[in-house]
Image (tube, rainbow, N blue to C red; front, top):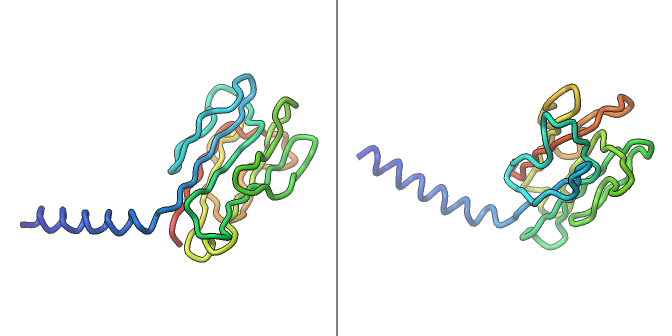
Length: 158
């Protein structure tokens, strides 16, 4: 009896979640000596760990969100500093210039920001995984010449 109740509750939860999460966040990274990785989503890792391979650019894509909604990323790049906010689909960082990304900020804008949040963390050279941060907070370091090597990003309800 308990199994049937649990199974029914799980089915209802999944059915409710399927309509609540029509948005999809995908992301990929451009790595030294590799180029662009394939897109990943749902908190999966993009980039590498343990290889000393710098991340040079990041691209986020948000689809299925209400009109006027966006996800934006700001990258702190070696010898450049903060680049400024880039909307969904645009590249943050550089390609072909051998410059490392040292820190990032990610935020939601428009109607989606009322009910959803974006949480992310980065893997840094010599440090490992940093803490999870949310909605525009800085992940990574500035002024320490420490490259980002991998990233994980989650889109979730508030």
